[in-house]
Length: 182
Ligand SMILES: CC(=O)SCCNC(=O)CCNC(=O)[C@H](O)C(C)(C)COP(=O)(O)OP(=O)(O)OC[C@H]1O[C@@H](n2cnc3c(N)ncnc32)[C@H](O)[C@@H]1OP(=O)(O)O
Image 1 (cartoon, helix red, strand yellow):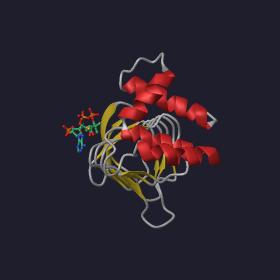
Image 2: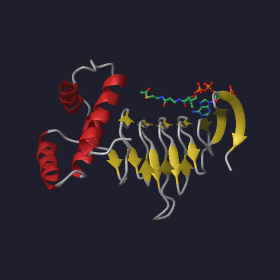
Image 3: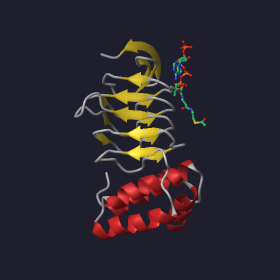
């Protein structure tokens, strides 16, 4: 758990660097490289900066002019934990109540509401694969993997892999199962 925005950004940079096999001795260089090369990282970085202070807010608008955000990636969530990795962030909208640390989100993912105040809560170390939809007032607990194109409309217990429409559990604690979500 990290507290300041600067620490959160550092965790983001280190996680992205690890996943993308960058040299992890150079945080500053990695930050600049990620900002230059990955629009998904830019969107996340601007999200962090916007939440810091007024100067950060102005700074964000200036650099945003030169280095654009990922055009169809939307982070509408007040509380996103550190170390979020976004792979191919096109057509992805994240409208969760909160997201824990070290999550992973792929392209064409929708995390959204079923009615105005009913948004998902996502735990730590949750991976949401391509095309998955997580809808409504559900809790996706820690260490869950949501399979490509799954539609999740019920709570998911921790340490599970879920797939399908509607989603069901295919692995729990690494063991193959076939269980409905309740
Ligand atoms: C450009 C790019 O490439 S971006 C990256 C795109 N890739 C992704 O998003 C990866 C998505 N990965 C998945 O969906 C994976 O299948 C996972 C993570 C959900 C599951 O992986 P594993 O735990 O290895 O499961 P495994 O392959 O053993 O499959 C277990 C069972 O679930 C089924 N299954 C696996 N994934 C899915 C899925 N997304 N939807 C429906 N069924 C699925 C399998 O057919 C298998 O069924 P069976 O037991 O009847 O044979």
